[in-house]
Length: 70
Image (cartoon, rainbow, N blue to C red; front, side):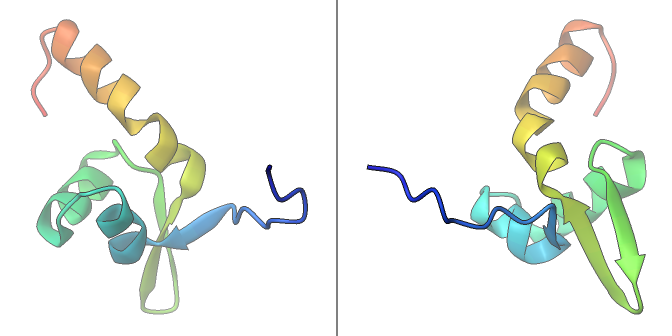
């Protein structure tokens, strides 16, 4: 049974969101810097769009299959 009242945030703190997906802090910042993760700042905190985290595996696979570097 699913909870229809669950709130799915549009963005989460970068480090915490990436940690929940098994991504280390240093890799999280590298992915954000490269543009693979849609990240932005509010004050001194960096946030990432949850949709960007959700679709990251597909985009990484596409980049690798296209012969690109990470």
